[in-house]
Structures are given as C-alpha cells and as structure tokens.
Length: 216
Ligand SMILES: [Zn+2]
Image 1 (spheres, rainbow, N blue to C red):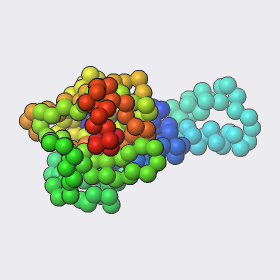
Image 2: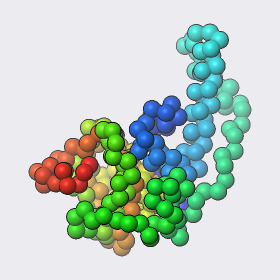
Image 3: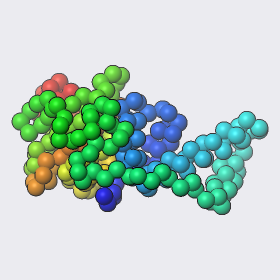
C-alpha cells in the first residue's frame, strides 16, 4: 500500500494528548495501523510530550526547553515501530475497526442512504459523527465546507477532490478552511471511514436540503 496523504501534525498532537473526539481518534488509530510514517510520528510526539512533562515536574519550562528536547531526541534513535502493517488487498478490516464492523469489508451490513450511497454508523454521540460510507463508482459527494475538522480514511477504492487523489490508506485531514467535492473514481466504488467534530457546512442548496438525510 503506497500512502501519499497523511495526518496533520496538529491532529497527531491532539491524538497523543487524548483531546480528539472518540470518532476522530478511531480514524487516526485506523490510519496509524496502516501507515508506518504516521506511526513513527506518534512515537516521536509521545516522546516530546513525555519529555516536556518531565521538565514541568522539575522546573519551569524555558524558551529553549523544546529546542533542547528536540535536539536530544535527534540523538536518540526512535523506537522501532511495531511491525505487522495490515495488508488490505484482501478486504480485511484494519484491527482498530474490527470490534465495530467485523473483519471483512465484504460482509458489512450497509444501510442505504441515497442512490449510490450507503453507510454504517459507528459513533453518533457528541457534536460530530463517525461513520463508514460506501459510494458507487463515478459518484460525487456534494460540495461542502467544514465548521470543524473532518477526517476521511480510504479503506477501498479512490476519489479525487480539489486537494488531490486519495487511494487506499490515504487520509484527508481537513480543517474549516477547506471546501471540497470528492469525486469517486469510475473503475471502483469507494469505502471510507469519516469522522467530523461538528456538522458539515454544505455550500449548495441541494446539500443543505439533504443534510438531515445524509446525517453529516
Ligand atoms: Zn500516514
């Protein structure tokens, strides 16, 4: 699996600090289970956080503390991340998701949303939503912006939007500055795991009218 789109640093820091919503943390954990690069970043972020906490215990943090810690970390080899990246070519669900939707992408109990769209809810509590979305080949998702953040992890298939092309394992980590309209590639439908931390802001009348139906 060649992953081209990764988590933002700010999302990684929030994840390590435990301040993401349950749904967004699940999307991050699932991407990390597939992505060696982001897994290494998490280990690094945890090390920085731990070192900062130690400093806070002993004395006040000076302006140069972070710099010192970073240079120390450069000298220390980063712990080898766990091996065993999930191979998804056979439709296996990544481990963090299995207790929610089972082990196979092919035996999910989909609920129909609209022609070409189906979903399974994972978390619906709190301000955001976390759900699995299946979109048919060639379909486009209505253009929308975000009031908060949106994480979209591709588990199968691919789509393109204003930012680029996203394929299996890629994560679209979007903040409230981005408006986009993902278009699913024509050769294969896509399955993605999506979490938002507040309702989406649809930019077309059709999107606004459908919002109560789409649930985002
Ligand atoms: Zn990554």
